[in-house]
Amino acid sequence: MFSLLLPFIYLAFVGLGLPDSLLGSAWPLMVDQLQVPLSYAGIISMIISCGTITSSLFSDKLTHRFGAGIVTAVSISFTALALLGFSLCNSFPLMCLLAIPYGLGAGAVDAALNNYVALHYAARHMNWLHCFWGVGASVGPYIMGWVIQANHGWRMGYGVVSGIQILLAISLFFTLPLWQRQTGGPVSEKSTAPISLRKAVSLRGVKEVLLAFFCYCAFESTAILWASTYLVEFKAVDPEQAATFASLFLAGITLGRFISGFVADRIGDKNMMRIGITVIVLGLALIMLPVSAALSALLGLILIGLGAAPIYPAIIHSTPTLFGKENSHAVVGIQMASAYCGSLLMPPAFGILAQYVHIGIFPFYMAMFVVIMLWMTERANRLCKY
Image 1: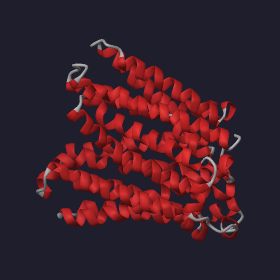
Image 2 (image 1 turned 30 degrees about the vertical axis):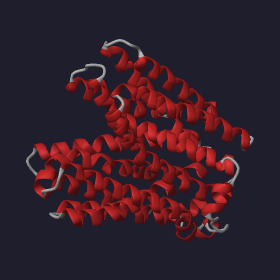
Image 3 (image 1 turned 90 degrees about the vertical axis):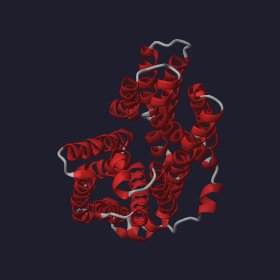
Image 4 (image 1 turned 90 degrees about the horizontal axis):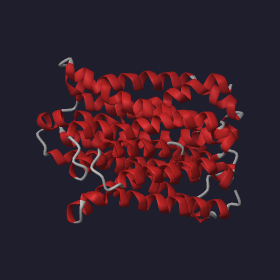
């Protein structure tokens, strides 16, 4: 059943990534039609993030109650219907309401799928699945751009992605018997009662892993949001060239996860994290070089993307080993919540620092997360005797 179900899980990860960049791609046009200030994109983004955090925290109970297959199919249905609502929406307040099921669906499916793959599949699949998320996140803006270029408007872009999600949700409902056979039926998925959030956080090493996850996603989101601005304002790179350079960070993550899949099983999760952090340090060192040449920044961004690639999959895949299979549902859920908190809070925090201190602190701000991440992952490994 592994071989029959796995392609649908890969498709689910593509579907998970598809909507992630749509708002940023379409917002310049949405602003005029919705007649709201430019900054209001942050309101929608924060509502989505709050929804993902909430559903991540409850994903353990949902998965024990209904099973990973049903949670995945229903959650993608939530996001599909929310995106369909976006495509029909003419009101900003209504769009904010639609952002609630959008976020709830995204958080639940993220936690359920990550835990399911960590329990049932080898490390290579975790890396390749997150590579497929990168494919989805990259394809989403292209779909939106193609639709807008064809003069069909941003609503049609949301409609196209919604249609893809609806088809994916339908296909997942048809795969539900495969999920049950994989786990021995719904009863086996619910054989142990879900543990409380307090108990999950109190497990040895969990606090350290949560902080490491917070730092990783803070690092990734800050790079995505601010790398281009740093290159323009501090390295004197042309804006067009800077945008291309900044996109290489995501390209590095996607390529890095594809490559990592071939070696992750042999090297192991712990060493994949160490190698990734080492490569990130080399990339940051290149970016920090006191030269104006764009080449060093270009190579640095590619390296930090390649280095970041295996860290997220490795932390997730190691969860059942570190904390026990019976606790992995709950731990993965709070890991996702911690990750979303890092993405939500730390990029705006850097914006404030850049405004009142200097944009040049960008690589040092990023290095702070890397140091904490290394410290916390090594400490968790010792505490859990991994």
